[in-house]
Amino acid sequence: QVSLQYTEFSFHFCGGSILNDNYVITAAHCAEAIGSNNVKVIAGTINLINPKSEHNVIKIIIHEEYDSLNSWINDIALLQVETPFITSKTIGHVPLPPKGFNVKANDVAIVSGWGRLWQGGPTTVRLQRANILIADHIYCEYMYNNMSYNIYPTQVCAYDSSIEKGSCHGDSGGPLTVGGKLIGLVSWANGCANTFYPTVYTSVVNYLDWITANTA
Image 1 (cartoon, one colour):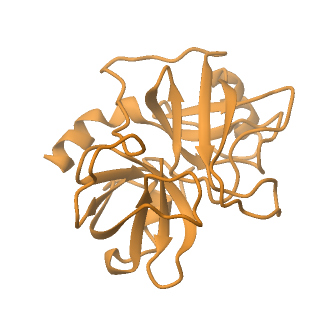
Image 2: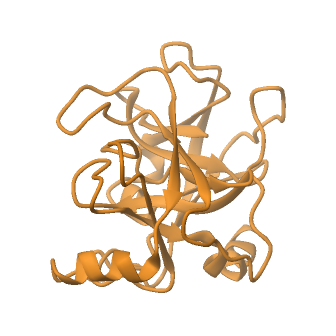
């Protein structure tokens, strides 16, 4: 888990994950508004007051078919860093799922980030994590279709229907993992950690070829 920050202000604005020594994976909507020369990646810490490992970004690759006007479809991006990540006790690569890997409704997933602690609330300097559940895709489609949003097969939904926990503003681009594998990237939602409306994630398994092609 890494923090994306503006170089000038050291202000956390999105999450991401380390794919390999040179690349971070995040959401396209995190990357579209920034130039590579004004963003850095903070790795190796759970407390942002104590940034262990800072890496300037030299290249941003946003999915060619990302569309923020169409339910943020293909909300995925790669950031190439100038100085490689050195694997250590606190810095590791997130494993990608194998091709054809499917999650099922009610699978336990973990979402983490430095985003707001509640809607409209403060951000946190300590990394937070929550166990949530993969949502039924048809339920997710139904709930968002009623709001005139599409949910695509390249998206996966997750939430906790009994208690308000999950992602919030500032968590975007961060990881959703199942069994230690990177299943989703925080994309968008109706509110924060809503018990009726799941959060929508970019489903990483659908982009394995794209990731390989762009990190080769």
